[in-house]
Image (cartoon, rainbow, N blue to C red; front, side, top):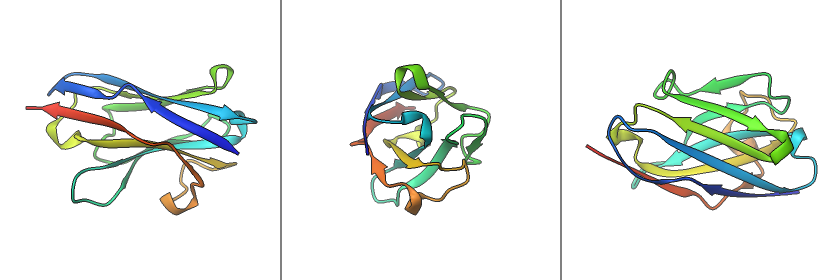
Length: 124
């Protein structure tokens, strides 16, 4: 079991940067793959980025490739999403999720643990 808490969201101008954190409590964080997802008003939750449980592989949605970077620090039980060159279309609630032994390619339905989300608003 793992509990997740996101932080780092906020209001930023287009072209700016934010770093989201996903702090995990519970055992064996190093055994969990982590995914970041987002949901804009009136839209379905969508995949943003993921990192597998070993930390050796990452995967990104085309919309964020080259702008966002996912990473993890197992010593701190924390995963991160560095977001650069933000656009207004990146505005959404961002969620982190965890799944034991997840590869970076797992789909949204395979993530068993979710945080409460953090709002990211990009003004144009």
